[in-house]
Image 1 (spheres, helix red, strand yellow):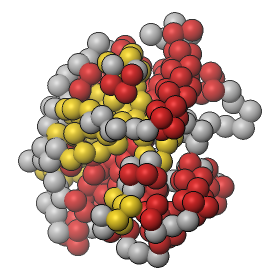
Image 2 (image 1 turned 30 degrees about the vertical axis):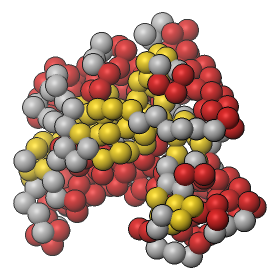
Image 3 (image 1 turned 180 degrees about the vertical axis):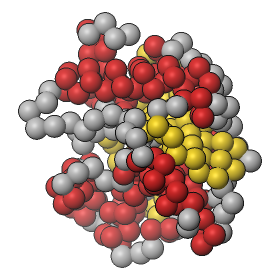
Length: 313
């Protein structure tokens, strides 16, 4: 079985490790953090529950010792600071780009072939940064946002229809942001039935709107960013990679002509397997959806351009 390393032992990183224990698909997990004792303590706590999880996965908590992540199959980067009141987009990118750059540099010293999964925000630019700054093959770097946004879309649809979430199929593409994501309501189904036949236009519009502010809604309730759904979303993607499940997952990929876009990392459906994302699936979007995707790509590219303006890449 495989080895997965999670960088950052905060709420998202720790929840991701716990989710991987539930899914039980790797033999070893390394949880690394810069703050002494945090990763060690959380790893020990979870290991003391391993018997109840029904897993023999070994979790090792370490403080800033990247040699312990050697030979990882997947590395999940959750490190970074949240946007603070008064902080501009440029300032957030400037701070987190330094953190993510340092993490990836250290990770790749010991696991040059690992698939790098980026969760750190702003996620699309950080995925682009990781790919470009390290000159990695495009399939080796993937961003997690689309899987999380789609999970939230599933939740709001199931609530509107009053049905089990497991009976819903849907996805979100575009940038990972409340103004750039595109919940594809036309493609969403309940047991194969288009939800647009089961909900009114007003209900559909509300589901889409609620999905787009799903993260902000949780932040307002919790006073901080969410962690359970992001953690499970990352774990599910890691499982598809490690087990070569080749699931179609909406995720942040590097486009070279797909959907009419070039030189950008943005959310699209892709086949995810042992080599990272393997193939982008091009949906037949209608004119309205194409226009939304173009606008999302333009906004996402403008954000990523800050990396170039600040000579980060």
